[in-house]
Structures are given as C-alpha cells and as structure tokens.
Amino acid sequence: MTFRRLALSMLLVLILGCASTPQQPLRIDGSTPEAFRSSYSSLYSSLSASQQAQLNSAILLLGATKLHDPAYQGQSTFGPETLRTELNGKTFDQIIAAAKATGTTFSVVHH
Image (tube, rainbow, N blue to C red; front, top):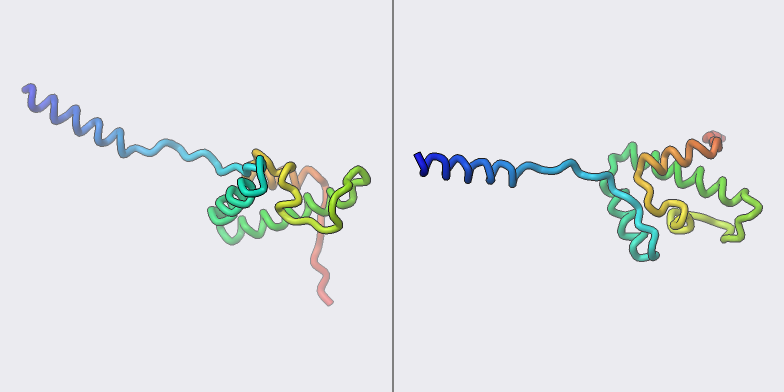
C-alpha cells in the first residue's frame, strides 16, 4: 500500500508540475529605449494580423492626438518609440482603450 501512495503522490506532483498558470498579458516596458523596443516587439509579434492592425491604428490615433496638443514640445513625427512614456506599463487592451478614449477618428480617403 505504501508503494501505491508513493506512486500516486509522484503522479500528482508530475501533473501539477505540468499544469500551466494563466499567462499575464504582455506589457510595454518604457523604462529605457532598449526595454521599450524589446517589449513592444514581443507584444507586437504575439498578436494576430488583425490585432497588429488595431495596434497600428491605436498608435496613429495616440500620436496624432499628441501632435495636436499645444503642450507637446516633441518631434514633428511620431511612432511607437515617440510614445514610449505614454505606452509604458500598458497592455494591448489598455493601448486600444486609450486610443478610443481620445475620441479621435480617422478615415481612409480613396482618390
């Protein structure tokens, strides 16, 4: 009976060891330019093509809003790295929500 309990205990440990914990959503680390590039790249590559398009649109909306802010003394162009401090600590869902919160919209004009 002792061997059976030992085998059962070992099996239980193996099963629990293989169980995965829920993965936390990836966050942008804006602490340094290098950390930002690495974390943004990891986040971007983890997304589907549709989500990548959403993220690109969100960056566009956030950047356009920032460029039109009179208090902004930054560059005349923007990209993800320009928004490093605004994106710091945010997940994909939080970035999308922040872009929606700007109230800014854009549309494609076909010529």
